[in-house]
Length: 189
Picture 1 (tube, one colour):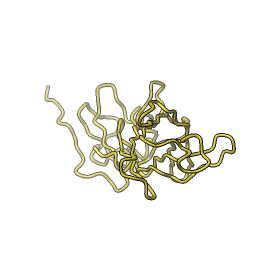
Picture 2 (cartoon, rainbow, N blue to C red; picture 1 turned 90 degrees about the horizontal axis):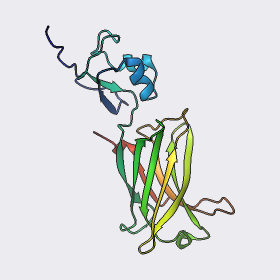
Picture 3 (cartoon, rainbow, N blue to C red; picture 1 turned 120 degrees about the vertical axis):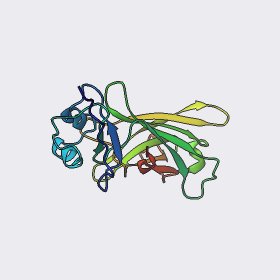
């Protein structure tokens, strides 16, 4: 029996960031669900697969708007922040199968930016909204802050998602300016 040669696209359509290599047991439907896209969109993005019901381990698929998981981006200082103030955002699928972003940042106390007492990490998905959560202090000197945002099942991270950190006031609910940010476009493989 002759072994199927893996089929690999020469290029992916514009706006398609992720590539996925098929493993045993995969179907186009399962892959579409995993990457939270529609089956028709996945099929349309992969014209090099003539029969979407026949995919094989090793085939490479273009995934519409996918963020390759896991991925990590550096959060860059914004608005005159010193370059030593930085952080990272880690986009991944958590233990429950939910898309999530973890944050770790090296920052002074939030009060250094005004009447703020906490930091918030947010994933800002264009056309949907932002999902955020409080960052907690994890060391004393220098201060470091960490937190985690788990997205609801109806939302998906996209390559143009911005991940940001900003100070906030936990009593008044007022948020300060973005002080660290990155785009998940940096999540290239």
